[in-house]
Length: 240
Image (cartoon, rainbow, N blue to C red; front, side, top):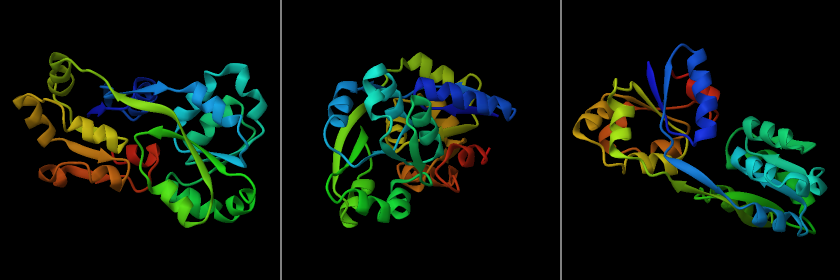
């Protein structure tokens, strides 16, 4: 099968390798790119905080750009949304990383007692991305856990020439579209697709990492949608 990978370039290359190992052909079409804000992240780390929360491996890539400036904070306790993010943080050098099951809600559920105890004097520092779901911060507030949120990166749309878009979708036609974030899903269905590309998409399976992402798919394509059993890449690729 030909599988359209809509992730940012670096993540898309890793996903493409996994798809190839499964015997399929990946078509890489990054729709978003991360604009890093390392100084904002560093300034936030310099402020008093009880622990750090991270909901994307992209934040780890931001911290990696800081080089030696991040070293004083590598002993901080870090709560990661899932295993992939945790692995990226450990690769950055963080020594105490705990992982949840892939969602912000699971982070609050799993770590609530620990977070309540740790944040009695200082807030949890959330190194976030933009745009993002408000659920994690809302759940923290509901649990009475103080949080200081700082945007460490912003996802920006990547300009895509019409010829490149048509080539990726049509030559030959893709069989599957992978969607990893709600922002990417919204961006994909806003693209100025040719009539042929629209036909290709209407016949493709649309695999979504979570139900929140699936809800961004147009109603007319609901029957094409399949959602991963859990919001981690291995679960998504298992649908192939």
